[in-house]
Length: 381
Image (cartoon, rainbow, N blue to C red; front, side):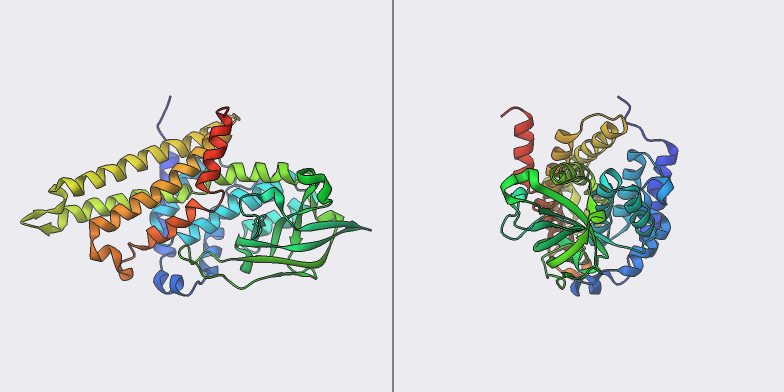
């Protein structure tokens, strides 16, 4: 098996890291405190080409291979001190965009994809409801068929980018008696009457990623707003979640690499009891663990990309990648705080933020428990 990257791929990563370092790190502390979504940085990323990475060339994208895309997103995470912005970008790239590409009509693709690639439109992907959580198919939102379309009623909660979105992929049941086979998906414009969103919800981490609710009150949508046929919502959701859970932490690999490099540098410089703290086994072992986690995470993530590139099944590997990356980001961030001591705990040094940002990864895009259920089910249990 070839574990090497091409010179072009390595250059893509380096260039993305440099772009992020120069353009995306202004006033992060204040923006994070204020739950402020960086619209200007979003547009910079679109102009750089980030939002077109998973979009076909005929709709304003790039046609890059999965491994090269991951290299760019890893570089972005390495250079950007704000975990929220890369997470928002990855959410857009691996859930909202694939739903349109794989299930949208030609008219829908022409309308939405070029605008997303240019940063002129932001999309949300809404399935979670406050009473159902991980039991997504028990949703209460309805999509009543009427003459010429559907009337949507319900509320999607804890949705990434909901407060700032211009359109959303959402799911509702056309007939509760049909169970999951009645779940249908729709691509709805924010300007449609009866569609609103909540203000930004305050949360522990990823504070520059706006989270909120999508609210539908007798919202009529034409039949042309449906994504795929009636009852295909489960298939769409499964497809989108496979790519999201497989890749949404691509940028955190870059963040883990930067975290490790900074930890090594600090452990060499910081003196205690007459020597560098890196000479103490309790410190050096933490750094060794951080290195091990990074390398294993990278192997898992790029295996997912390799499988996709070779058109092979990746459901198991995607679940393992999501589970492992989310949990080790928390572990390494906690080890990093221990290494820095009080400096790691004080917000002004921007070290503790990784831990706060990492906690959410245990929940969103399918909790760790759900990923373990997926893995064990695929193992025949």
